[in-house]
Image (tube, rainbow, N blue to C red; front, top):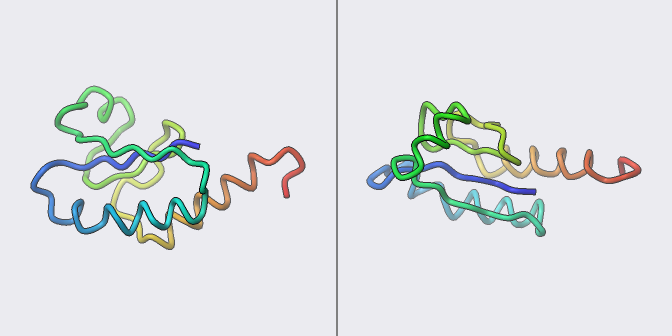
Length: 90
C-alpha cells in the first residue's frame, strides 16, 4: 500500500500534520510505503490526481482526502483498505 501526502513549503497546516498522519498510517498499515510530495515540485502528478488543496492524501495513486484528514480518519481508511486487500477478506 502506498500513501502519499501532498504538501508545499511554507504550509503551516502541512507541517503540523505530517508527523501525526505518518505515525497513524504506520500504526494502521505497518507495511505501507509513505511518501511526502512537494506539490510545487511535482505539479503535473498532483494535477493528474486532482489535488486542489493542501495538504491532501492519496492512497495507491488515488486521491482519497482532498483536504486534511485527522490521523484517526487516515488510520480508519487504511485499515479498511488493508482488510479489503486480504485474500479471504479478513
